[in-house]
Image (cartoon, rainbow, N blue to C red; front, side):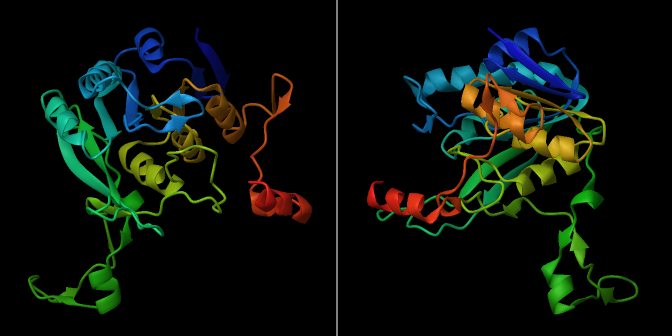
Length: 285
């Protein structure tokens, strides 16, 4: 059963993404899709285990919703796909037959803990940037400029130009993005095992959509995509199957203050609680 929450130009679907994509989203209607599906690595999403019986079963499920996403994109639309490093080659090959892959992005982040002891641990997640038409798509490079370290810090001169000039101090990001993961003490943190940072979604949404465009996230989680879309004047559609995460979306997008008699509020951090409660937590974890 699908339940829909609406406010202004934003929708939250509490349902299975295959069902919503099949029944509720018109073809050729979406400007930008950001898809961050379960990775099939055993994460626990509030009681739903991120693990399929086999990798083939997982991939076939992904191909089903990817085909639907492609149908929903406008001819000028863009799709960003995140996936586990071990599965991305399958998606790369699959999507290259249906879309134009313009960039293979590495989202790099540091880690405070040990990643692995007997092999090289993972410090990145891959992202594919795809479009339907490589000659006609949205890309607002001026809206996502970053500091060009060579030009800004070292003040090097470009002698290739007719008149030697300093290198630009700003540039469009390359395909390696160094953006911190969401940590427990960050203001944006929500109780979700794979929350993506606002800064990551801001780069994607500002680059590949215009104000008023429709942004779709078929696996919304903490609804960061919808949150950023609303912040920057886009329309949004978020789909999520876990009720607890739907409640996060209802709160973050300011749809509701209460849900079925429950006040929707951010879960307090342990360090924000009174000292005596925090002490009991340490004594009885």
